[in-house]
Amino acid sequence: EMRPTVQNIPFLTALANLVEADTKIYFVASDRIEDIDSEDINTSFFYNAFYSGLDHTVTFWHHQASAFVECYYVGYNAPFDAGTVTWCNLRVNGLPPSSQPNNTSKPLTTTQIGRLMDRKANFIQRDAGVNVIRIGTVASGEWIDTIRGVHWLTEDMTVAIKSLLFNQKGKKIPYTNQGIAQVREVIASSLQRAVNRTFLSSYTI
Image (cartoon, rainbow, N blue to C red; front, side, top):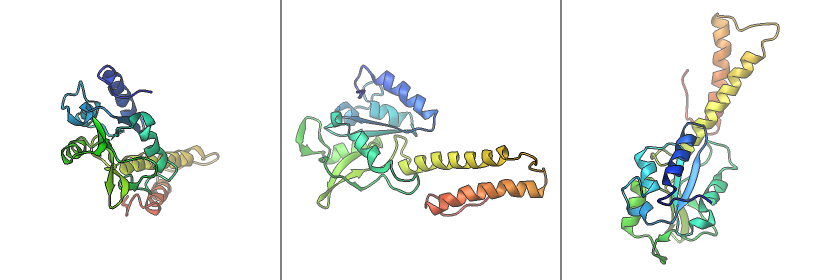
């Protein structure tokens, strides 16, 4: 189990930076008051991740962080195709709303919620009689579904283009309008799959 502490923030930062360089997303939960209140990158990993503008790290605040609430979050949407789902306002069953660090019987205050939102950190809030996940972003503020969708589309288009290039036995893609059209067709097919998933509304090549 690796959760934010003053001692392991350098390790978590290195891990987040490693993930940043790859097409993965890192989810981490905390129940430390510093991750709500502190604006010191050496004591608050949440503030550190926000301050660093990390696009592939998702922070989640919950007083039961040791229950692996971030894994619940991943498991909620990971089975669905990238680009087809939102990560915000998800109804939660089995987990209580995120509560105050020093009094888990009380909900987060308006100030605490504001600070978490300022850090682009996710949490569970009671709203209209149900528990829902806010706010659906990575630490930089970009939407999780956008990051995940870009990962998928990049991979899909890369595989499609390489498949075209790798299947030229006994022929070739000519450096002509006909050859360009072949490549454009493969790119268009990938982009259309993104439209079909509602990840894109339209595209232009």
